[in-house]
Length: 517
Image (tube, rainbow, N blue to C red):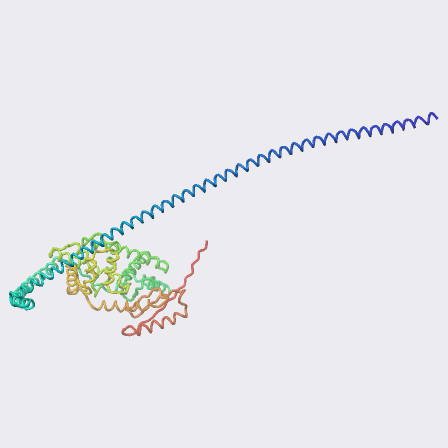
């Protein structure tokens, strides 16, 4: 019995111990929970308090910022209001000042008007008095002389006219005879003296230039394979190359001396260089063109230096140099201008007028001839336009306009230039008609071809028997070339007179260049 009770008691004790342990654990957990809940509530209260403090601080900051912004806006508005008030006050003062000025002017005008009315009345009264006295004087004179005023006037004029007519006619005749004798003598002396003292040389221009060759083998190299070298040179320069049986020589033919000079320089350099092909020809022609332009400027400067004229515009100096390659009836235009300048200076010195101004007018009198092949109009009008453009004096301008009688001369220098021009042109052998006629015909031929749309350049060659036309490939197609050649031919037939026939050669070239890199 006792053995059975011992296990039971042990089990009961274990159960009681378990129950007590469970209750103790429950009490501990409850205490822990209560403790945690209390601390959480305390923390939450602290967080809430802190949040309330932060919110209060933010609220105060926001209020302060709002107040500052409000003050700033208020200050800006007050400032703007003050500025506008000040501006309005200024406008008001200005308007008031203008009104005062207008009132003052109105008062002054009223006073002037009243004064003018008063003076007009006084003048009217005095005029009436003078007219009355004049009438009285005439009546008194008529009464004393027994003649009316018209009769007295007629009698007096008739008697004076009869007395003066004979004396006047006699005096005029004597003066005319004396002036004619003295003028003829003086003019002969002036002209002879000027001609004797002026020793200007005369150059007769031709239409060909000869280039010497080192040997006859060079002719083949100039012609090139299938004639491409000679074609390139003729196309670029507009000058015809004549390669015939003449030993060691090539003839350059062309009516334009500038083109002929470019061709001559380019060909001589090609001969010296030895490398003759289209690309090299093109390069040499460009260099020759630049050299000719430099030569023209140097020739113009040399002409100015020769006659002692300074201060001419550089463009006019260049145009003067260009006149070296311009002829008039076979007479070199630059040499002619230098000669006229020197003659004008000599005549001016004899007559006692400004020598430098006379030389300047004489040098520039034919300046229009340097551009008359490129621009429409007479060389007189073109020269006057150039002188106006480059601010030449009115005396020089009148001399240019009047040297062929287009306008009346307004000063003695214009008359001197006109006389000097006549003297220079009238010398025996100075001019010839044929060259001018020839160049005019070739110029007309080129002008006709250049007038067509799509034509880039045109060159009259072979003494006007052929014209070569370079067209713009983008504007003229291969089919259009046929129609263009026909239209040009018809136009030439209608407008020009010429012996034989003229060949119209239209050339269209397209190039594409690229580089391998």
